[in-house]
Image (cartoon, rainbow, N blue to C red; front, side, top):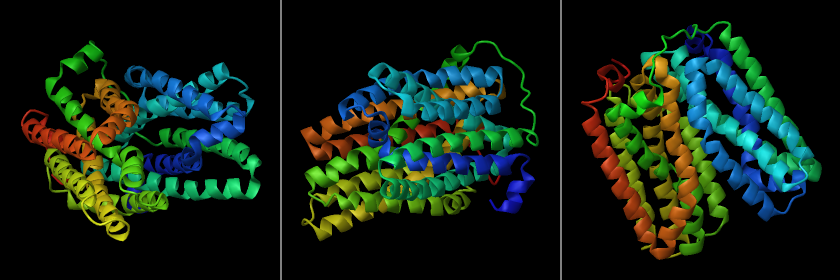
Length: 406
């Protein structure tokens, strides 16, 4: 989607600019999360870790609450609220002086983080429909990955140039980025279509009674767990088990980030004639190949051949990630009735929250027991999810399943 095509979608341009600014600020902070909080608050790292974990658990409740608010008010207002919450949280971090204060501030940030995803997905569905919606999802993913990568570079520069003061600067810059993003959303709302939808009764009971959608969520849980390979499983597997150099992790992460940013729109164009369920199933098949490639890397000689094996496996993993992301969001959004879209996307987004909570412990246990067991478990789950997607292509709404080009 070019600048010209963005302009054709009312309100999309300031929204995308806001997404860029938001991700730029987050990219400065996320790579240094625990260290950032430790340096800004002066609390011990163990205390910081416990506080962030407790806040993440609180954040789990934010998805369903955000979904109800989206349906009652509108997605843009809830999205603005997530920016305000996170701006206040980061502005408050320098004043944290104890464990209770840490949990309170980190919980505010966590609630804003978790509520952001269903709100942003719902707002994209307001801005665009059909193939334009798929393009906008892909463009937002590309924009955020580019900004996140730039933010990571800026964080390294801020800390190296300003020392301890750099962490305070990161807090203020991140807070300011959310304020600017909220301003972009306010501007977007002046041009975007009005969010007027009929209200339906039943709330989450109606969502949970939609069996095809729950089947989609169950399949999505397998995909979201697979997405945790790079940030959670690979550091342990590559360094502790395969003996690869720790510096390789930064290379693999950067490679993945660049390719996701560069390839999102190209992969979306490639998928434009494929039904969304089938595109997701094929993405799952590619992720299964990636799991096999990671497992096979342990069978090759150490050092350079293993490093090459990990690079190849990560390239395959990145392709599977690209093939899954846009069809997944677009399918879920199109499946949801407009009056309950916030609740539908909140349930969908909960799969990512659960994966973030359970993947670290689950992956560690499987790798400690027998490394191949992790890859076999993920491959089995992905195979089941892929077959489930093919079955759901006949049960989900036809217009949601249809190829974007159609």
